Image (cartoon, rainbow, N blue to C red; front, side, top):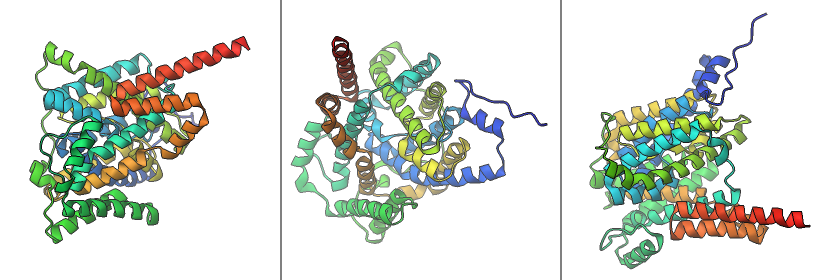
Length: 427
């Protein structure tokens, strides 16, 4: 009688080791290759669009998806997690880049990786899952609003008198004052991309709606010779390969300056990655290992920073796409990164023609899908305590920042929980 394969169930054992120990054959490779290609097609425009919305060049989004995505899948605790740049980080990355420059952003990303490593090693992954659901819905919906607002300038082709403000209220005021400069061509391209994405999602849900929308908008802009800003006109295109790994100069003063940003990246990255892994668990019936997942996210952020990338986390939409595409294990995520690298090497010149309005339209769709509108409304109606937690998290995230919103929501939820237990004991 043949002995069963060894069981890799340790808290710090990557799922890749588990998959290989269980037996991984050619059939599994084929399934993972199809899933990886499917996810890469989705991730290609998203990675560039998120980078641009974050105030950096589109190639940095691709570096993050290629290097960080590969490491997340190879070392992580989820069979299906896809790592890369995420819309939830747009506000934090943009603010960090504006305040500390690209070198400061890369250093903050690297330090965040170290913090995530430490968090996983001391088993904080088991604690992050206890973040109240109302807090998660509140900050996710707020981020969706902020992402949408951040795309209005490129979507409308506006010309501002000065730099675009980072805070939501001043941003909307500046955009409102610039409305007379709206470009009909840019607006048409953006709206066409949005309409195509929603139409395809309804009539052909298995097709890569976002990519098709961007490609159609790009072809229309080129064939009709529309006067719209493109990746090429703003950034000069993207390179056709990865840069040599390096870190900017590190000094104690720089470390102390970017430490708050690194802590914010760490908190959001930990929550977002484990939420994504939990979504994959619900879709697949599997269970992820939270602590090794945090360690992998840490290594991925350090790796992305070495290649000039931005923050990496588990991405819910791409992870769900991976599961639905029939992935068998982490090899699908690793192949998705290799496919992205191949796309970058072969098709980099074509990216120069992509209108920024098309990418803005794509991210408006992402924001719409990200906003938990139905769940937000349900929680607000559930009870006044739950409504207070949701609205405090949502409002403070919009008015101040993500860390303030999450902290206030968690503190409020804890106070309500303690008050409820005391009331129960007195009864």
